[in-house]
Amino acid sequence: MSDYDPAGYGGDQRERWGERFDREQAAADKRDDVDRVKPYPAWICSKCGARHARRLPDKGCTWHEDECDVCGAQGVPVTQARDFGHPLFPGHEAP
Image 1 (tube, rainbow, N blue to C red):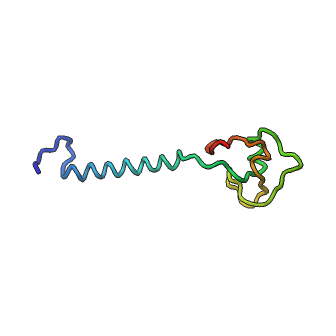
Image 2 (cartoon, rainbow, N blue to C red):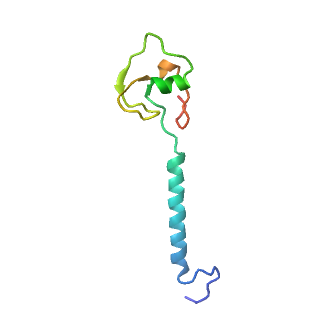
C-alpha cells in the first residue's frame, strides 16, 4: 500500500472509512428508532380519548385498569379506541 492519502485522513484509509461508516450507520439507526411509527393503540385512557376523539363514548363502552397505549400512563381506566370513534393519534398508524 502506498503512502499517498488523497483524503488527508492519515493512516489506513480503509479503517477510517470503516469508522465513518459505523458512525453514520449508528446515527441512521437512531433516527429510525425515533421515526418509527407505532401500531394503532388497543387501549386508550379517557384523557387521550377526549383529546383526539371523533366522538365521545356512550353507555356501551367497557373500562378496566391497564396501561394507556398512547400516553403510557399506568393503572388508569382504559377502553378501546373504537369507543371514541377510532381517533387518529400522532406517531401511531391509522386504524
